Length: 398
Ligand code: AMP
Image 1 (cartoon, protein in one colour):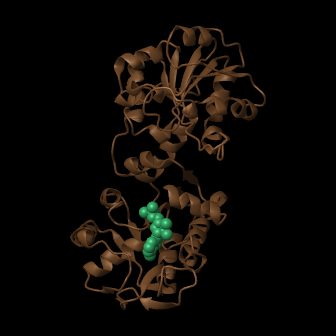
Image 2 (cartoon, protein in one colour; image 1 turned 90 degrees about the vertical axis):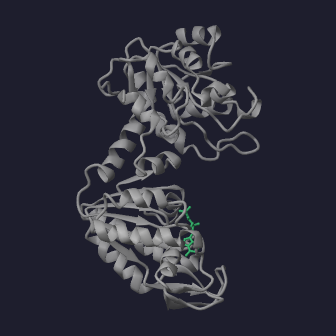
Image 3 (cartoon, helix red, strand yellow; image 1 turned 180 degrees about the horizontal axis):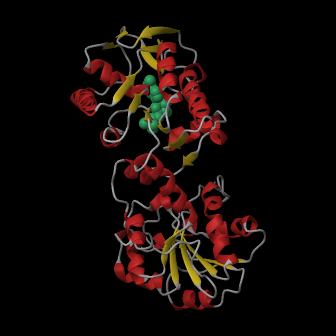
């Protein structure tokens, strides 16, 4: 397989599929440029190798063709700044003769951005003819959009067939896949997954897939209570999904059969309202009276979580173990974060992923203390669910 590190970009127009789907405010100013920064190593590599980067991305969800509010124009100057003042031009479209001519005229060190791919419905439909037209603009294709790797769109997957020998991952996807594989393919044991968040229903496929892989599974947050209820406990007003009680029972049964150590909250910080100022008390997780709800892991649970985390060789963390957005209920998640950081210092590989967990590690300053933070939402979850991602399979030729 071709890799970005050994590919010769000299004189080549490199079509780079990036995820520049950045948030813009009402003045079309970029409010978070994380995704643009993430693609810089790949763009710079092409420039340094003597090639010409042709950037393609989607932005927002345009429904009926071109719409100014979804144009990639507001990104041009910022990309130029991020590239140290490089000339960045934008094409009026993403396919066609004019665009081809612009791509042919890129001077060394310059960058061309194609207009929003989703101005064509054919993009999300994975239309082959459209993919062919895109492919005619470049000499090679780099997929560096992990955020859309779970979609079989024209620019993220279908285009691959037009570059049988000139397709590769960008650095961002390469490091995402490498890091995820350290968890799902060849982890240092013991492997511990910490699954938190609000609901079992949104994490069920991942949990099922992880049962084949992990040594320890810490289940925290709101989903605790579906398990507590499944085991005959009283959950009071805690969040609980009655439709998933049978699922919770099955998970416990399968975990036992596979020898997975399941760790739940045994005590919780309960509150008499979903509010930072509510009255609170520590209660056994299975004895929560009506009018009270468990909103964070209790001290005994936190100790048992920490003990397992600290002995782990690999840690996957997805979802907070309490309502961390409220200070009163953030202690459990902070303690888990501290334990993950400590384990990482002692040599464990730790991967944090999923929207809320990323917000949490950033908010509490754990970002530098973990091994890898994955910012891809859907793609990350599907990878953890064990699914094949079209954008990855297309590059690998699977
Ligand atoms: P998720 O998107 O599924 O990872 O869920 C994250 C959300 O779960 C966060 O906003 C937390 O506030 C919420 N959460 C965590 N623990 C609880 C709990 N015990 N009760 C209600 N919500 C919770």
